[in-house]
Every structure is written in C-alpha cells, then in structure tokens.
Amino acid sequence: GENVEQHPSTLSVQEGDSAVIKCTYSDSASNYFPWYKQELGKGPQLIIDIRSNVGEKKDQRIAVTLNKTAKHFSLHITETQPEDSAVYFCAASPDNYGQNFVFGPGTRLSVLP
Amino acid sequence: NAGVTQTPKFQVLKTGQSMTLQCAQDMNHEYMSWYRQDPGMGLRLIHYSVGAGITDQGEVPNGYNVSRSTTEDFPLRLLSAAPSQTSVYFCASNSGTVGNTQYFGPGTRLTVL
Image (cartoon, rainbow over all chains, first blue to last red; front, side, top):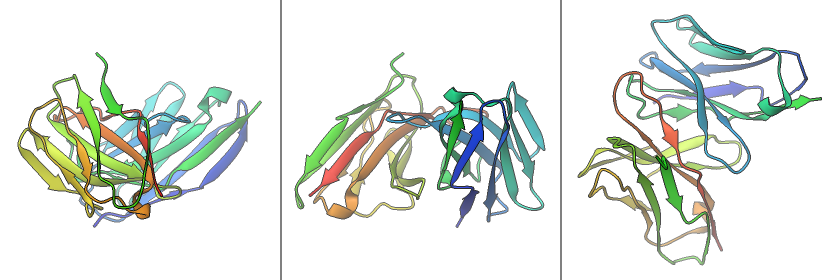
C-alpha cells in the first residue's frame, strides 16, 4: 500500500522568511495530493491540493509542486506570518474523489516574530 | 451550514467499556470517513463509507464498527475499549466528486484507562 514520508518533523522560521515542507510517496497510482493545516484543538483544514496532471499550483503565499517521476511533492509558504504556525500534513490518494487518503506524519511549523 | 460535527469532544473510558462516537454532516456529502490521530503518526483511516448502507475498512479497522443508515450520520462504535485506542478521532466528509474538498470535524479526544 501507499506510504507517505514527510520532512522535517519540526521547522522554525523567522517571520517573513519562507518555509518548505517535503513529502515523498511510494505508490505510483496516487494522483491526488492535498495539504492540510491543523491548528491546536481543531480538525485539519485543506489549504491547497494538486493533481497528477499539474506540476505546480499557487494560491497567494502558498504553493505546491509535484514531481511524479521522483514521487515527491512540496509545500512552499512565502512571507511567513505568526498565524502560519500550525501542524501541516501532506497526503496522497489514488483517486480524485478524496477517499482513501494516506497521510504523512506532520510538520510542526513555528513562525518566530 | 454547521459542516461536520462530532460529539462528545472529550471522553474517558475504562478498559472493556463500550461507546459510540457521533458524527454528522449537513452538506449532503456521500463520502464519510473516520480517522484516528496519534502523535508522530499523522491520521490513519479506520473506516469509510461511500453512501448510505455502504461501509468499508480502512488501514486500522480492528476494534471499531461503523454503520451508515442515513447520508447525514456516520457513528463509530468501540465495542470493548482498550488503552491502545486512546487517541484523537476525526470524522470527515466530502462530496465524492472530482475536485471536491474533504472537510474534517473538530475531533473527539478519547482516553481509555
């Protein structure tokens, strides 16, 4: 089955700097890759996603890149702000319908003022 | 819309007790899922349902039962709680169409003594 690895497990950046979180997956059949942000005491919230027919997607300060050949995808956050501090999860799914996700272990991002 | 709601928010059980975690959504979503979240392990799929009357097992189904009698509700039952089931449980739903977003509930923190 699918296995998703995520690095780093913790990341501290200064406010205004960029943050990059990387994930690798094992199943070449996976074709949908969402990223979730989880704030303390809350459920995960989708922040951006990418499908296998796209190499890059951007939404304001957040971007995701996908390399299907190497089976890795990355989350890029530019101009970080204190409210970006949270745990971020990547996931992979073999279908476009958002079912049967396999999640990475998470990255705790701290943005220092 | 209330989105995805879960009750209770917190629960403490003794080993061997049974209980039901409730999940409801008011978005008319076909797909609903249960995940457990443990430190350093991301979210793992317990059971999922693609519509009323249809359920299937995820990655870690042992010790849990589900049923889906209506589109709105997807309860998770622990038949005989064990300390290994101490975790945070999240319910999620999505529409099951291409390009959909998966919505998570706020979670239930369960402790089994």
